[in-house]
Amino acid sequence: MKIAETKIYLKFISWFVLVSILPLLILFIVVYSSDPNSTQLLNNPETMRSIMLGIFISLAFVFFLSLIATRFLSRVVTRPIQLALNELLKVVDDLSKSVQNLSDISQNDSDISQDLLLNSQDQQKGLKTGQKAVAQIVKSLNQIAIKTKSSAQSTANIDKLASESGDKSQAALDSLVAVKHLVTENQKLSQALDAYADKVADITKRVEVLADTAKFLSLNVSIEANKTAFGEQFSSLVSQIRELNITSQQAASSIQALVADMSRQIKQAKQSSVYEWQETNKSIQIVGQTINFLNKIVGNVGSIAKSTQVISQETEDTHQDADKINSMILGFNKSAKSLVDNADDITKIIHKQLVVINSLNKSSAVLNKVTDNLNNLVGDKSDYAS
Amino acid sequence: MPVKIYKFTLFHLADELWALPLLPTSQFIACEAITLIPGAPENVLGLVYHGGKIITLLDTAKILDLRVKRIRSKNCLLFDYQGDYYGLEVDDGDNTIRVKQVFTDRSKKKFNKYIKVNKRKVYILDLENLWEQVKIYG
Image (cartoon, each protein chain N blue to C red):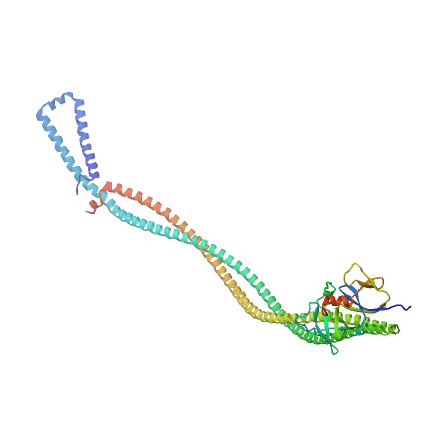
């Protein structure tokens, strides 16, 4: 143990030395004041030496005694303080460790709470985004469902129209077949009329020849009548033959014009009949192809209607799934909100813990300061430990 | 004093009315299936068979220097001359008439004799002028 390093020792020793010097000074002052001549004793070297020796010895005794007293007294005084200080140091150490641990825990809790809060906020944002997305999906699905229903209805109408078109096309085909039959009959009639016209033309030629013959007859009768001396008597006969000739010529011309007109009309009718027959054949082919196309369209429309129904069913199922997802998101949202609330509560608790830790730190600091002061008073721990 | 009567057979050619003196064998016939004769005079169209007779068909329009619109006519005025039969191609025949007077158109060099039918001049195709144009009898 180093006594000089112990402040209390020094204080006590100083105090004792002061206490020891003070009576000597008072003694010198009193002696000097009562007898100023007594100072002359100091002029005596022997006396002065004796006094100084006495003072020195007395101070040495005082110092020695004060040292012993201080040691004894300090032990008496500092022993319980040492014990208390030891306990206090242990408590301070434990408190410091506890505060450190609590601070670490609080820091961890704060980090966790911060992370939890951030995660909760992110989760809440994600849930809001998901909710919006699900709402949009539901909206889109509703629109798809509406349009799918409309498409299904349109498809059904198309199917109905196609079926009706098929029936009507079949009816048109039947009508065209009947028209073709009529046109064929018309062609036969035209051919018969053509043959009849040829016969009439032949007859017309004969009538023409007859008219020519009558003409020549009338002319030649006139000649022959004038060759005889009695030609005037044949004048009425010649006139009648002449009238016959004119009538024959007019009849022949009329018949010829009639036959020409009839032949032209029959020819036109024949051409029209052939054209109608060809066009009817084309129309029948086109209507047949149209019926085939309509049948294919009906088949395709049927498959489209089935597909539309499947799409509608799938859309309905997806709509229900979206509703479920929406409900789940709402549940998640509530959980996230409660999680955020819990995180807020944890944050508040952590704040409170931090306040307590701060107060504990302050208390610990104060305690450390007290301990240091005590240490200063009683010395280092190691000193007492020894 | 008896009045002389002239008899003529009228015919149409190129929108004109002409007259041929009445001959014993005069008659209108239909002349078809004309047979062309190589080396024949230009006014002879060809030969026609009719009723057992071979008829020399004359191009009347060319003889009379007339322009006709049609290509060929089937009307023919038959007559005989010195035992041969001739036919005049005409557009159409007409009546046989009797007239009392024959006129002469001095302004024309050939076929200048005419008769009047309904106050209309009808020139006569006389045989002398005809043979001068056809030049069959030199």
